[in-house]
Length: 201
Image (tube, rainbow, N blue to C red; front, side, top):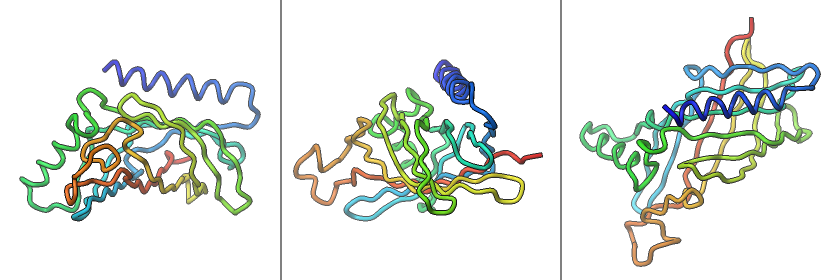
């Protein structure tokens, strides 16, 4: 509960700071139920994929131009999609939530705060920089985002590659352990993100 309250306070303070004194800026709530985060992780002998849900967040725009935002991911919603056997699926989900990986009992949320947005000159494409926090460790990240209005919502699409070892997740990492051979797990995992705002009335 403390982590949840801290995350919400962080988002509200950040958004308040960003919007203060800025003309024509509007804060749009994210719709977690209409948003989607897909993950893909690889190892020497194969790969696994699944999804995880946003807990909440907001996006700042000005006259349709992306300006900022902050988001919270609910780590305990992590699911595996490629394993159909219920027992094996449950076992992998439990392992991913354990201390070997995301330790979701101790760190139930992950956060991303946008610190800078730069137009690329390409229609609807922006370069977003910000701080990613996983397991209470924060690292800077920068990646392209497609931002546009679709119907009565705005959408943001991004594809991220995250090095888990930068957040203290070193289980079976070839960068930290020798002689793993076919038991090694890639340091990088990938996120395919689609964020939709709440409907604009």
